[in-house]
Length: 631
Image 1: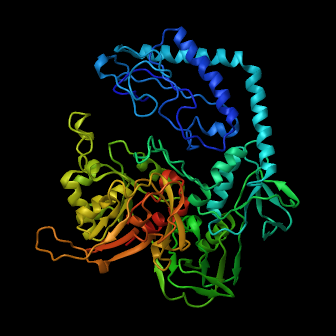
Image 2: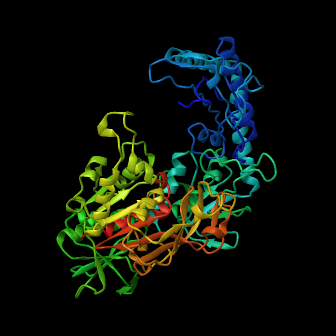
Image 3: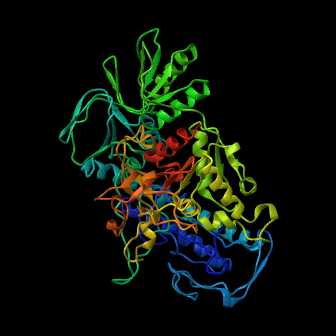
């Protein structure tokens, strides 16, 4: 539950606030208006003051629980009622009531807010009464406009098919050859789960200027849920709004881009014009095409492909089977096939034979059995003792990180403030991940008195010192987005976040997808393409500074020579999808860095490589930081 101004009841009806996703049929807003006004009318009849319409939220990002249905031609109504203090009443003086910047600039009677709440006592009972009035109003509206609602649902589906047949685009083609088969399969199943129809060609065909093989997947835009499919697959160009020329731009409520092919590292082709469709069959569920084990039946060792996120799963499964995998540090030709650096080498055994066969079958990763000595130039991989910092302050990023580690089969331990404060971390852990959280929140946590003492105080100076000692003793500290600032300060790294030194009018990038260039020779980038996409949400870009002499009072402990820039934002055309102002500020700047400190290291991410468990294109960077942490 949110609050308007300080406190006070409120109610929202779509469309609430521009911008809206241009793919949605305009008829959806008219239909929503019918129901919304019926709800608001019932609430006024029941004497529910403080009801506001058309305020606060935009309908641009399709990830809201009330916006995803819109691409399916379905009206969804969001209602919110301000909260009490759990079940305890609150008393709100009239002077504390105030408006909001979007849709209700002043707390006074106006067209979308004709009956302001006057202040006073606000109880849980009031919340229930408001919600009941809203529910009764919805039932009344659905009954009153049943014919219109059903007809409009049909009409919007029919219009979507007609628009798709007209082209622009006519279809989205997903070729079978993908760098990361695991991510490509996930993308297709996201679409299928959302009711999008996908067909698989059973013969070669030509679309535009390209010829595609049998097995290519086709998303025809002539389907009822065209708006949903198009919204998820296409590039976004955020419709920037300013109240007056030269005024600050209005920020999006959530993000400005989400283009799934970019986020997930999946190659697609948008085909604008009509083409002759091949023979096809409906794809009910996407699966990874199985690979096979080639080569010797009684080999000395196996070499496995390790592309994409499936390559990390393969490493974890080999380790779970008690095997000792290693990465190739250079290309290797085995029986006519060239395996890239980062491919996996494992000695033959019965356990290896069974595990490698299962990996090839389930993850689609080619393997070859070979005789002779193990190839030289390998990087051994072990199972690091991994910890994920779990603060007592609210932190959604930690939850997403925890879920991601579980899904990709990484064993880990959650650590809280008290354990970090106790120190001696190197005895227990090889790597510690700090999720996206500002240094102040990490250090100070919940203020004293806000909750029981065990849940206040953050890691404090003792925890900060313990993290520093952990790294210097040989541990790996992995920091995501804003938590990287803590590592920079704590370890005196010669780095400057150029987004912080730029003027407020010089740089702005809210929730967008940017081009990222990687040093493919670095083990942190193994299994990845040299160019990918990073999700940047008010994130960081680093400049490596010249060292200054240490005078014993906090001078830098790390020389630039011990800093590896593994990933940089592109030198030009940085924006792939969304909204970026001030490209020059971050173009070519560091985004992923590896810093050697004492016997250990820090892997710093300027962005969230695991953003909401959606950014599959950069998961592998985080995974590789973990894989290379075992000692």
